[in-house]
Image (cartoon, rainbow, N blue to C red; front, side):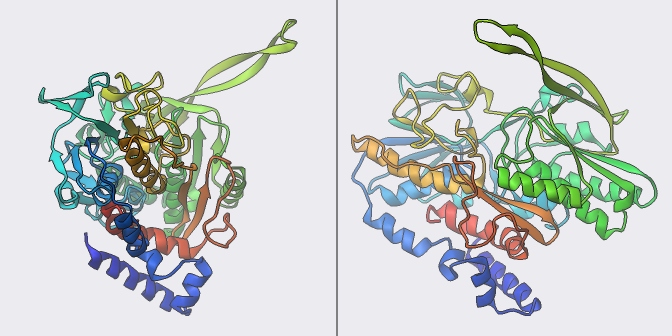
Length: 489
């Protein structure tokens, strides 16, 4: 991945715009995009800002996690500190450039999973020490951690950017899969799923497997009545829109094959909303109705019988109990019912958690995530520890778009702490979810902790747009690689 890929992406977008019979200027004016500076991630202006802000602060910085969040943070620190001492601890030799692209692999838009992978070493910032190992124990009182090799690493400042674990093991029938990750060995997932129609987009290899299963499902739908089921669990998840994106994309592929009439598509969500922001939830509901896609709330996937093709959900609800005279209110009684749902195609969004070695450690919390101040990203107990990305206990912040805002705040605040000052920069909860609603259409959902749309562009934020599709499919990946991993975007 290099500048040439960004150039190629822009050329593709220009070609698509030309096919549509409009000028590039008009297209990006329509989208509210700022032209070349935007496409390059604003790198020149921001690089100049970083150069002016160089700090004399000293200290050994250790970053646990060498994915997008960890490498972007390291790159920005290298630019901001005059004499940086940074170590990244990351076991994987490969990383994923653009995790939202997994949905595009799973739907056949991207032709190969290799479009999303890159060698970790190729984007390790110059001057950063990389230890290809895993941190397995933490002693924050002594400012030390232990690697799987038993080596002890000390630090002055620690940044936790280790991502999340896919917790398949809590689903009955998938115990043999246990914990899995977005990148790396997916053999247990693929062995368990086999040729059953069970799929998941949450691993790069399994997203390629999903496209294979999708094509077989479509062939069945051309001949017989079939059922596709999509799940969302009872935990926080990365990219909360993904369980719906894959449903939209299957709907689109079925329409292309003229097989949609034979397929029932149903979404089962443990929560009670189609989206956390009302305006987007209302828009999605209308889109579901228009596409004849069904949904059920308060259903959590608890078991899968792969051989019989039955998914079991815990359907839960509250009923009114006895009246409490002291509180002057009725008790709430939670009820449960196991519901068995047959399927021909099942997309599982696995429950997700912090890696156990972190979530259960002294720097973790009762809920597993790393507890930080949601604005400063500083650990609530240990002031020389920060956390970023999926593993941080930050509401609504488990997307690449969130990290793009977070890592700048974290770097500025860490430098302030290194200089003996209090952190003052604040992350406002910005999250962006380019929600694919069709092949060629995306609704760009942007919001923050206000739980209201916060559009970056002067357009109706709930409108599905072709221009956002071009941005998601062609531009965001090279912008991520060229911009964020250099610490500039």
